[in-house]
Length: 129
Image (cartoon, rainbow, N blue to C red; front, side, top):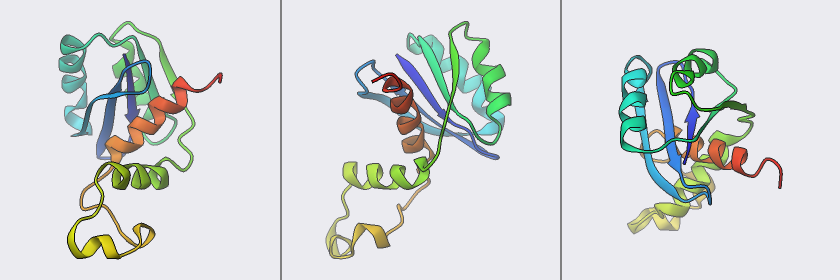
């Protein structure tokens, strides 16, 4: 399994994916709590690789991830927020009157850092293809 991480200043989005890109787990944690959550994730799942977006706090999170004893890779996170919005709406299509408004004009009702982490992990998985 690969753990994708979208680092931020106050919160961290994460996504655990199978080698084929299938999503196993998603979440968003406060930065201050993420190290403890990372330990919990590693106890519940066999993480083989960590892919971290090369952005804010990537260095700090790389140090946290290195404690797992698995390879840690920094990945370009260009346009992941914009693409994460599209991924969010693909998996959670608007309902009711919101379905009448073009997706490009809508904002997700919650933070989407976890979907950005999915894209970071998938970008790492497809790096050589």
